[in-house]
Image (cartoon, rainbow, N blue to C red; front, top):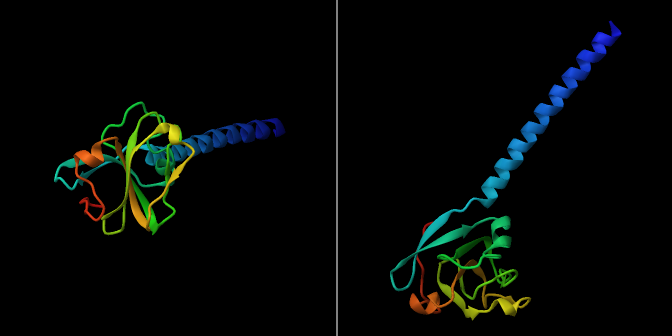
Length: 157
């Protein structure tokens, strides 16, 4: 009788642990998926053309940025929780030249760095004033789309 009880308890424990591990894997995978999925946003540039940018709206996506890519398609819009002068960018693990742009909370351009080289790492590039957004674009896009200080970009967030 004692042996049957012990076997039943061990069977129950194994099933419980298996179901617990499956639940943990499901929720952890779902959280990771939400943090790493690619969302795109349409941004109207100063020349009225629409640029599709990947959205980096959480710490995981902002940390990764465009690092490790051999080429940049469209670019990336970094969205920060609050305006700050500390929203800096770096060329960590970058393999291509890019343009960097910072916007204030009104989506007006406040700082631009053009043709930033991967070899500039570990230099850090920061906005001159508090920024709410940053954009990384393929080198030359700032000139091509007529980005300049004070111009406003249009996008819905």
